[in-house]
Amino acid sequence: MQSFICGPLFVTWNKVVNGGERRLRGCIGTLEARCIVNGFRDYALTSALRDRRFPPIQAKELPYLECTVSILTNYETAHDYLDWEVGKHGIIIEFTDPDYNTRRNATYLPYVAAHQGWTKIEAIDLLIRKAGYNGTITEQLRKRIQLTRYQSTLFTMGYSDYVSYVKTTRGDALTINGAKPHDTDGFFTSFLSRKEAFG
Image 1 (cartoon, rainbow, N blue to C red):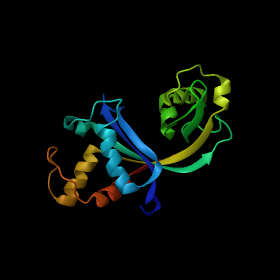
Image 2: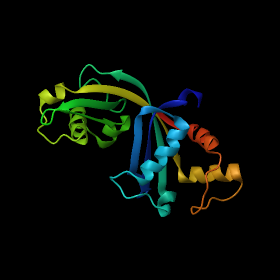
Image 3: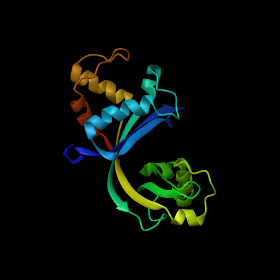
């Protein structure tokens, strides 16, 4: 826990369906350093309720959800847009839109390209689109990208794990409606004990 007092983080919600398939239900975070406990509180709610790509998560979905916190580390400036490894690095791209002369940027977390089965160039081109550029993607544009690569440590907890935590610490059953925060720091420490992988 002490190693992660502050840092950039993202909170991802996945819904487990069809016997194990995970479908994204929200993912929002920050590339700026935040107090991890406060950042987790804020982005857990924001990613669950305010990710514009998805409708807000509803109470009836809770038993099927997994929550993953990605704590971002090891930032490095890449030599070029291909200087990173799929499955190991997350990437941040920054470039000037040649049509509007404005700066654009976007990021993919380390697991995204590998999970989607993308090559490096596919990931870069899709990230250019994610950044809001709608023009023709050329090799010249790719070469102008400033790329920062990073790694992440993932911590994942499913709903059943959370129910077990509540029963252990409060001695009562969890009710979905009207549940109140309790010992948030202790919960987060428990959450961090479930480290999934190093990026």
